[in-house]
Image (tube, rainbow, N blue to C red; front, side):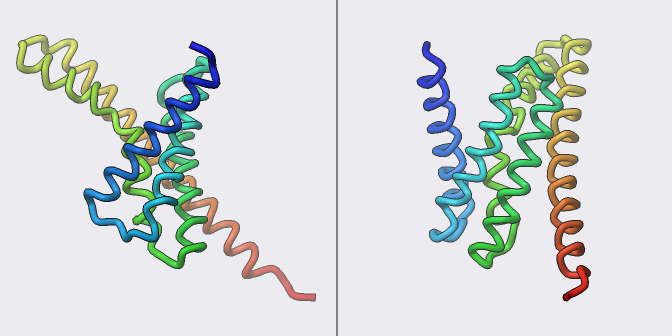
Length: 152
């Protein structure tokens, strides 16, 4: 498959998944498009890093960071809470398949592989949380720098 077609498919489905989840959780209509863009940009960062051979944890951290930065920017643009853009935005990054494999391994009695899957889910969730935290930290640092800057 050509790279541009793969890129188009990845971007389209990440946008649609984000907007669909945003509709399910009752995100205001005027924020749906930008919530979709936040999820799409985060997934783009994740997908490109995974294609480049970077590890799954760094890709998830970077994707969450991009979603966090987009969410902060979109929230200020639309004058809405950041959570409206962040919660739907991180849906494409959620390790659902790995969590399913962990539960399946537990049910099948394969506790060693279940423990590996559970630890992978916990590490991915931690990377997503750290990515959001770094985006918030960057936002606060830039805001304080702009506010505390002496006027000439």
